[in-house]
Image 1 (cartoon, rainbow, N blue to C red):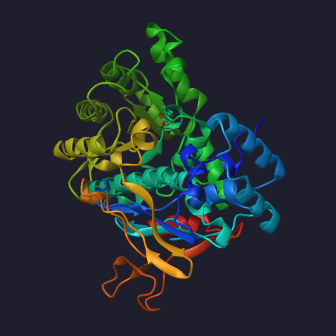
Image 2: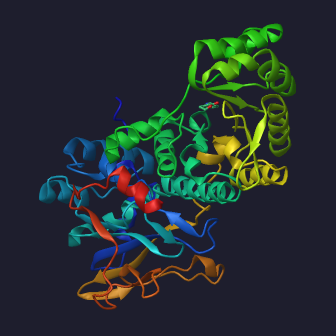
Length: 461
Ligand code: AOY
């Protein structure tokens, strides 16, 4: 029951079921590649997540007689006729023991690749399975999602690092952007992929499935960390007249370490000035730990600066060597409402303009981190660039007059580092040197040794 989707015969688009009859007669090889086309939102891509798709859906003896029977029956109803290539799939079962006769090469995960370069190539290894290469497009292109999350989270890291360098301490970067996104995605599998992708660049997360994916598929024992934190229900359930007691309770229940408390349930300004900054001030200062105050409504740049002003007024500040103010070390702020790439820069700018170091704040991001993006954010596409028909190899490409930005590359491709140190896509035939950076990750059902999460993080750094 839990494995109801797990059949490669139906992890594709319906029309692809019909494509085996549509290639030129005599086609023996179909070679396709995956890229982030030019004009993407972020100029360089962090490639991440392929191992999950390969191991979860494509590795091993994925074709069985039972799965072929089930697919044949489904497609007979779906198409109202015998469109399904039972003979072709039966060949994979009989001749290859149900392992896919495909070779996939890809850039190592975590590599930062400028847009418009090959990231992955796919080709059949058995002449009879020429139709299988692009059957796999649908599933393989889904790597767009973890790659786009990793790409955008890395771009947000660059913004944070710029402000930390200008106003504070860049060594704090690992916990400056916390993943709040689980509830805003469509399903636990997406949370796992997006959550793990964010952890390529950061160490703070509340998205538990991301940890599990990093552990299960990339061998990372514990990829991310969190702290005790309030939500509105744990504060508002005390009633407005006892909000102060709710906040005091947070400090006494967690007498040491970091603790975060959402503070806008009724009046964020009263909470900062009268509760944290007055009634509870001595407890906060006596605590062996850090109180993190969380506003959660209003115009984020305005509210953050005002919260800092009030906390600074009550708890005091110091001025760092760069000339920016830092709150008393027992008090910090986390802004988790409205955070996306654009808002992050606006808040940090407003803080800097008001003389505040970025050291004072961390951010939480949910929808803006895991959901407010799509395949067009990085213009990801998978296209055939070469075929073999009979004994003739031919270039394949598209070049629509209606959109020059959609033209695709031709030929068998490799990714190289050129003399200037830049990554570039050239034809495979263009000389053995420099060497191809694409590595074989899947060959006839078998996976290559996986990258560790640490290696992936190191590449992205
Ligand atoms: N978590 C830091 C630890 C996490 C959260 C998760 C949606 C945290 C809040 C916090 O401090 O306030 C999902 C919203 C918030």
